[in-house]
Image 1 (cartoon, rainbow, N blue to C red):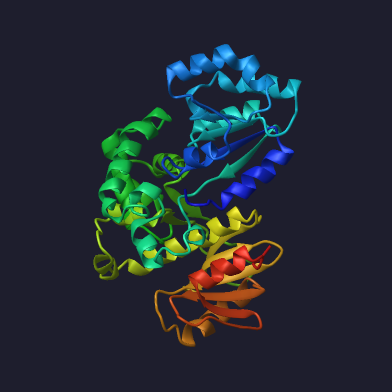
Image 2 (image 1 turned 90 degrees about the vertical axis):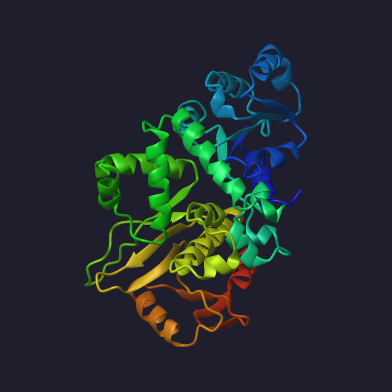
Length: 383
């Protein structure tokens, strides 16, 4: 088992809360991680498992063992009963709920378990969790354990099968009111928009849908951890600012499968390769910060005259990031970064590239991604 950065975060949450919900996309490793805690395990997608828990409820929750409830959203009756059990005995570390985020799951948590449960997100494998894995290989195949990390030959067939299951089974079961063919087309259009400012009207015209409908469908894709909407940073400056979010497919392997890229050479030949690298780096940064329990807000920044920052991370400090797919970034990108970072009053300016030499001086850093991620793990960063 690959050691997961979220392990210590789950343990710290369990010290303070009776229950923890471990959420994240399917096949990201939630069940494997949960079984490492050696509690009593129930798969609630299976009717016999529900019956077993139902009959043994008092004995199970009356004991000292952690109770692991996988696919919790599959059994709505669980939540009010678990609330009553927790209210009768507020001991910490009683239950670990696993589930993919769906409207039903989050509604049940907010209505039944608010204040009784902490939420931890588990992403696919991150670069900080795979220090010996080639970074460009992780970029190509993405972080899903079975999608190429453990067996490289499974990419991209595994990703295509995963997306088919998501579109045909999961999203409809979570309530998305659209035919799978429509969602499949929209998902590919979203992938083609990687790193661009989101334009729901343009997508809607292609699909014959209103922009409101397209945005409602996008909510489901976001809830399934497929996409990230990076909101625009609003600064008090004398320039018109872009207010729309930028859109990214969160896992690079899923992005590349959607866009029919099958090898590193093929990837590097694509005109959108820079947007792919940008999204990959953003996910690695935000994933590492979340795993270290850093509370930050993330944005992009763009003015009407095309001054922009790929990522703004705001906590106690504000960090401005420029992301370049080059091994020799030079001085020109730094000059542009400083100019735009001044607009958001950033305390630190970071140029992330594939450089072999990382340099830090004053409020500016030029570095590669592994150097930056190690700094976050060591306690550096904007929070």
